[in-house]
Image (tube, rainbow, N blue to C red; front, top):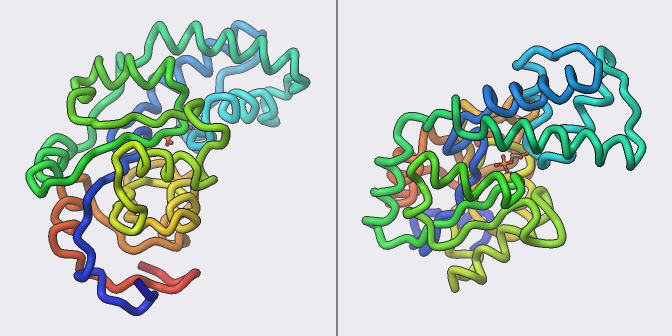
Length: 243
Ligand SMILES: O=C(O)COP(=O)(O)O
């Protein structure tokens, strides 16, 4: 496909869905665990809205960004980060899924994508130890033919490796896959993998505006993404262009 080709020419075989900020609002649980960690380390708690901007590049990055926040200023040498990560993990396991909420249209959208014959995968930077229990707890696990987590591949999003791994697991050429995410990590990973990518506006995107992203369109939920997949309605934009 060239950058000018109409997207209507694509018949998608798989949807690769981001988790945090796309399928589920996980910020209340992530923030509760991060703040329990900070308090245990003798630091102040941070506002949930600020912690939300630290989500998207995996758990270790979230912990490092909390420790190095100017209001916290805890050491970020390897031993300190490893200790903080263990504390965060203990707290997150205790609350994972407790306050998490499905975004509107997720179940309807997953059903519609399946109805269209697409295989479904979750591709998240969240580690496996938290992802699998969360999908089970939220009643989502049965929808997915593959789950690729932050520690499944050598590299995380924004590297294309996890999306390409999901394509291989689903036996789907990248050109026939549709990624849906909420952040720059999803957009960059998909572009590098040659995968069509949509973004939802209600997620985290590290506090940035999704209009800055190089993507193929904005959709307002997974139900809207399914409608888009059935009838791609916007031409692919050049790098830097708005959707
Ligand atoms: O940083 C995270 O753990 C969240 O990752 P995700 O947005 O790729 O699901």
